[in-house]
Structure formats: C-alpha cells, structure tokens
Image (cartoon, rainbow, N blue to C red; front, top):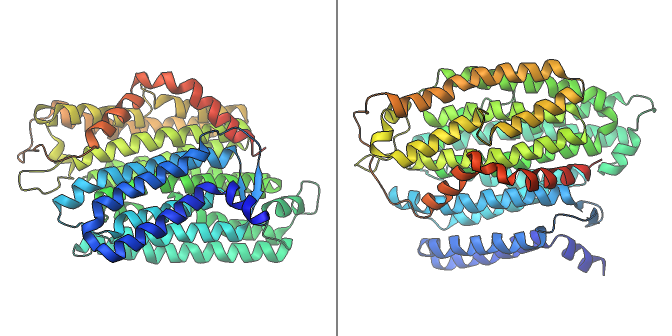
Length: 482
C-alpha cells in the first residue's frame, strides 16, 4: 500500500524513469537510426510527466520513506524544468543534422538529466538531494563532451567533470558533517534540531558552508563560477542552451529548499553568505561580460550575473523573496532559451556556426527577424522597461527592500546599469554597424522559429498578460515552504 502511494505521489518521476528505460532499450537495438523517433518519444514522455504536475495547488505529500516531497514548490519548478528540457530536444535536431552527429544517446541522456533534476527539487533528505544532483551532473558531463571529435567540446566535458567532481566532494563532505552534528539527513529533523533558541550548532554550520559551496557550483555563483564560460563556449550549442536553462532552474530551486526548509534556523548565518555570493556574481558577471568577443561566453557571464540577481530574493529569506526567485527563474528560462535559439541561427554559407560578436554586425539587414528577437532578449535580460524582463528584477529588488536589505537592492540596480552596457552593445552591433564580411544565411531550423516567436512574445511587453497567473503561481509555490 505504501509503495503504491509513493508511486502515485511521484508519478512524474515514475513516467520519466519508465520512458527512459524504454527509449534506452530501443536505442540499444536500433542505434542512431532511431534518433528522431527517440526524440519524439522523449517529448511524449516529458508531456506525460507534466500531466500530474499541472494542478499546482494542494498540500505537501511525503513519499519513499520521507526522502521525497511533492508540494506546490516542487511542482512549479518541475514544470519549468520539463519545459526547458522539451525545448532543448526540439532545437537540437537541426543542429546535429548540420554537424553530422546524430546519435540516439542525446535524447536518452537529456531525459536522464531531467529525471535527476526532477528528483532534486523534490528532495526532502540530504541523501536524496545528492542522488538527484549526481544523476543530473553525470549526464551533463557526457552532454558537454557529446561532440567528441571537437577539441573544444572534449575540453569542456573534461573541465566540467573535474570541477564538478570537486564540487560534489565538497557537498558530500558537508552532508556528512550535518549528519554527524544533527543526527539526521532528513530536512524536517535537521530544521527541528536547528530551531532558533537552541544552542548554536557550529558543526552543522560548517557543514552548511560546504553544502552551499557545492550548490553554488551548480548555479554558477561566484566564486564557483569558473567553469561556466569555458563549458558554455566548448559545449555544442543545444547543450549549452540546455545548461543555461533547466539545470539552472533545478539547482537554484534546490538551493532555496535547502536553505529555507532545512536550515531556516540558521538564516542569520547563511544570509550573509548568500548576500556576498549575490553581490560578487552580479558584479563579476556584468564586468566580465564587457570584454567578451564570443556570444556564448557573453551569455555565460550573463548567466552568472542573473544568478546573482536571483540570489537577492533568496537573501531576503521571506516568502515574497522566494516567490520573486521563482518568478525570476521562469522568465530567465524563456529569455536565455530565446537567446540561444538566435545563436543557433547564426550560420554561414559553409554551414559553420558564427559565434563572434563581430559576426552580428548589420544582422538586421540579412536576418531582421533573428536580429529583432535577439534584441528583445538582450534588452529583456537587461531588465529594461517596458519589456517583461523588467518585472523579475523589480520583484527581487522589492523583496530585498521589504526585508531591510536596501543596500543590496541598490548594488543590484548599479550592477544592472553595468550589465546594460554589453546587452546594448549587442543591439548596437546588429542595428547600427555596417554588415559583417561573413554573411549569415537561412538554414534548416526545424521547430526553432515557432519556439523563438513564442519566447519573444513572452519577453516583449505582450508578456505582461502572464504577470497575474505567473505571480500567483510563484507566490503559492513559495508559500508552501513557509
């Protein structure tokens, strides 16, 4: 009876796991010829996994002996994760066909990573957290080096694996310390042990520092960001698009759950750490992007800066702050995905990808649709009104001010001004510079134009029609943690 109940509560993960095994079996038998069929099958699996998540209301339910929790917070994040994974599948097929690398392992590995992310955001135990995190990470290491005949891709996979192994070691050491000094790995038991009013548990606090270090690596927060630009640049572009969307949402959601739910009693101790990471990420991301000449590296530094902005909401430590983080993640996923789809469209007559900023010069003359969409995403990422990207930043800044962290909000605004420079530089190149020597030509984009158009509409002022439902959903999800 308990097994049946756990299967029902974790039905999304059950669907993902079952679908993954079926697709892997088909791929092992039919090989690379089954790529398109497996991609379509993976999309069906993702769609079926999303069905039980759509009613995001309802209370929290524990399963698998308390290792797993299903609540509005996890359901909200899983819908974002599934959306990001589905988009990564759709945009990949034209790319793999163009570079003549069509392997059935891609949809299988992406589905395995999705399963790991889904388990991450529903983890209610430090051991479940680690299992989900490693399931996602091991798949990601392989995906980064998927284009194995390319030196940059192989280097990206090796760097990601080496630094990821170090981060996993830090996280696991922190888990062992927390277990040793609290006597449990269950989030509820840890929270009870660290209740405000008890003697300060310094051992658990040291363990928390190591856990935050490991999770900071996964979200690309400074000072654990060093892998991000190299991996983004070296990994195949659809993989980089995937890294910049769904895994960031999952890791940030996990960071929020761990700090608020398990270590809420140590808020006075972890809040300064989050504030420092937020400031460092915003500043370094904004300043580091200014000197970049490669668009993928620029988007990597943009990711670092945007994680810094999202951390402002977590630093507030309130329900409004967490709701602002969730709202930010939803819009960030759309804007970053759209920017990478535009990057995928930058191909010359020889079929080679054009990733340098210089190649964007005068793009509006040859590909006005791509140039206009990329301009919307860049300006929306900068948080300029009246684009919808303005709202997430406004919400995290408001949450910080309401929590008394007005200096952090001011630093966030100043960092946004710095970041606006490199976003505006991209727009200036496309619309006001003379055309580049290498012409960008139309190519086979598959479903990309439809996804790009939808993302551009959401990032534009038209996206404000979603403000009410999205704000309500994020508030309900955040409220389930408090």
